[in-house]
Length: 218
Ligand code: DC
Image 1 (tube, rainbow, N blue to C red):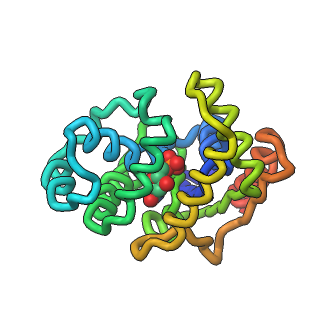
Image 2: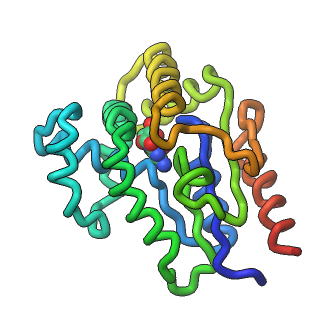
């Protein structure tokens, strides 16, 4: 069995990449990092500290010595669309990306006892964070389908929202993430593309699982 496998999963917002990453991590016994949570945590921290998101110097001064290792990434507040938007806004800062890049690479390179590999998901994993990843996936779906999924998720979390607003937020976020100067969301040429528009989570998992098994076989 091949060991120390690295899998990079990138994709648009609410495309199902997180669900896929978690399922693959469980199936193959890999350590998993949701890198969007790092950007969301940074957003929540600056919001709590009352730091203006436009004040790059203050953001970096505060976060450069921040120890994310002990951060509670299960914090419910990280899931909100407001924090997602703020995360997207500050993710354009090169200096912030460099700080978070260190954490991500450390996670990918360190030994995770009993784990056989690592999976990171985000926007620039296959292109910037782990350009030499063994397997890369790029996950996307049509905007209306993603909006419907995210809307249902927010409702189930008890956050009242209007579907039309969710769709607009996703469109704006994808555009911002794709057009930013530093580490934009782009498809790595060596990534396996998965369009989840007409697939449910199990079908997406099966597709990706087959790809991983094929890689492990040779
Ligand atoms: O995947 P997510 O919705 O939790 O990500 C929130 C924002 O964080 C996303 O809109 C852009 C930013 N992000 C990023 O720039 N690079 C990553 N690797 C992950 C997230």
